[in-house]
Amino acid sequence: MSDVTKIVSDIKDGNIKPIYFLMGEEPYYIDRISEYIENNVLAEEEKGFNQIVLYGRDVTVEEIIDNAKRFPMMAEKQVIIVKEAQDLSRTIEKLVTYVNNLQPSTVLVLCYKYKKIDKRKALYKAIQKVGLVYESKKLYENQVADWIRRVLAGKKFKIDTKATLMLVEFLGTDLSKISNELDKLTLVLPKGSTITPVSIEENIGISKDFNNFELRKAVGERNVYKVNMIINHFAQNQKANPLVMTISLLNSFFTQLLIFHSLNDKSKNSVAKALGINPFFVTDYSVAAKNYPMRKVSQVIGLLRDADVKSKGVGANALPAGDILKELLFKIIH
Image (cartoon, rainbow, N blue to C red; front, side, top):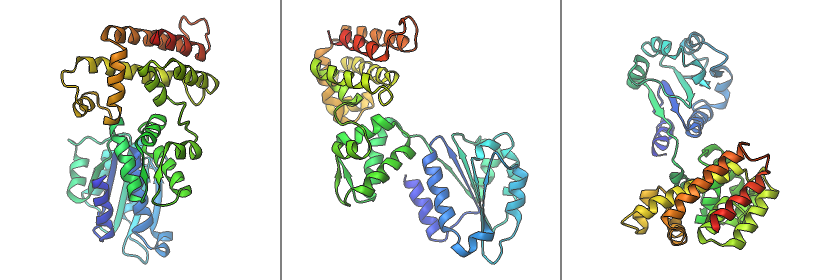
């Protein structure tokens, strides 16, 4: 995120590179940088003749070069943005001829999502000399909560821990999806307020009581009543709570619980680091470890594997997903 801030700050200060190659697995920052350039490098009256948006599937590298070589009309610069440039991966190295003899009045932006160019090849080295290569890396799940807090802090909002974890559990690591939901929340809530699980439930539709986060906690506590309440809700709302996702999250939980049992140092920070989890969750693992000895954890992982096979229609005699989940949880808890 600091790299993105630096790129935007440089553009604001007029330090604009002639070529930006934005690549990597996380499309969110690629979109944010290209949008900033699209909206801010040229004045509105200059954009009509001097700003072009192209798409990798519709153009060739040669056509991009032809556009990039032309001079701006009644402006100091022209901006060419190539979206979905990864569709040109087979021929992208041809761009090196332009980079080695580029048009200084052109700002060429290539959005090369989900892929990277080979850093050993000529194109990467050529762009590094005269322009900017930015690699947008996917965040790990345990980094997303901090990202959410930073984004909201920049908008003068706070968020409590459970609300953050609900978003991560429901939306995963897709920063674009998360950003869209945060935008909704910041539009309807007063500036300076704290986003709570109730805010999430009322404005996004994620249940604060019936979700995988609460199921995992109830299973760890061996809270039979709460587990049954949640799985009955899941059975009635299968689209919002797919069985495959629930099994996957429970499998991760019990796999981490197996690691927890093997740790010598069970202090909060040590456990959080070893399991790659938010320290907020460490108490859940401590409680679960008392309820599930190592031998039982191994058995549960076997049960989860069997349920996963059944959820894919193998040997389940077409059992409904809700019944598979109920049977699984009964065997885990008892």
